[in-house]
Amino acid sequence: MTLATAIAGAPAARAGMKRLEPRSLACGIAALIAFGLLGFVNAGLGLGLVLLIASALATLRRTGRGIAVGLTALGALLAASSLLIALDGIVAEHGTAGLSAALVAVWLGAWQLVNHVVSATPPRGMGRLVANLAVPVIFGATLLFLWECVTRGFGVPPVILPPPSAIGARFAGSLPTLGVDFLQTLRGVTAGYVIGSGAGLLVAILIDRVPFLQRGLLPLGNLVSALPIVGVAPIMVMWFGFDWPSKAAVVVVMTFFPMLVNANAGLAAAGAMESDLMKTYAASYAQTLVKLRLPAALPFIFNGLKINSTLALIGAIVAEFFGTPIVGMGFRINAEVGRMNIDMVWATILVAALFGSAFYGLIALIERKATFWHPSYRQRA
Image (cartoon, helix red, strand yellow):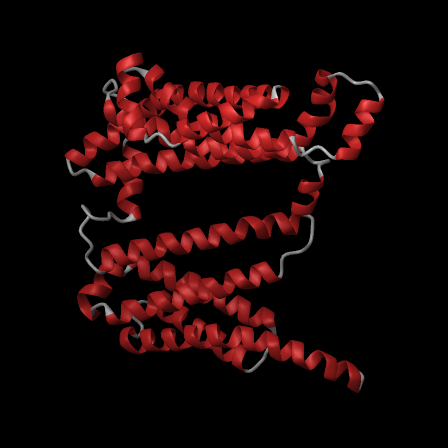
């Protein structure tokens, strides 16, 4: 290595060490405090804390990045799993001071591990896919770990916030009930989503075709979007009854305007040069719409569909608070809150979160397949 290369690389190396040292040092100090207060409560916890301390020392001594990453990952995993296993005994015998220090150490270790994964993500290939999946998995697992330890270790009443283990047990034991509730709510979500999004797209095309309607229909759509759902839902129940059609009507009201605004903006996104070319070919409005303007509007349309994928579920659940048969996710939440069965409420929320995430992911996957050619997608990729 030449002197010029060493001088050029030294600032970058120092910058990298400055970026790693504070978090690693804080993690090591927290692990050292926890080890001093808890000691070898069990072999896994003691060894995990020692590995986190060793990781901090390895970073301070500027050893290989791989060694520090391995020690951090192994130490955080051992400390977290052993802490969960012996949590109740640790709190009963040693109090919460050592527990707090151990939680801080595990959190900082997981945070540092996520940063290492992000910095080591390859530009493409299977490694990039694995890294993109690993980051949310590590982060989500760390949040669940902290949630479990805080609620159990600090004695949070289950009525206020139950631990994830209680929510998971209730979820596993109530699958038939949750399944029936989900299917009931899904009927309103599906019908309202399709009708609301489709109506928003058709009205956007109508506004584009008849420009003077922009001054009338767009403000009207804005007025509809501003209507409070808690006021609209009881009216829809009176109009369409207690079953799923009234929930679908609420979803239509919620999903219409986002699609209208996005589709209207997308139809105006076609380039002037391409529009002039279509005019030189004497293309009709329908031909221009199908071959140029709708394809150019696809990113905007999918943006509206993704927004509506979450709004539809929220609207259907809230609408079920105001009248429904004795099934449905909104009915279940309302009924179980009155009975103080908060773990069942969280289990229902878990079902809604899983479905909403899967629905959003499906729309995003279809968008990726349909708009791979669009410049906006290439810039995101």
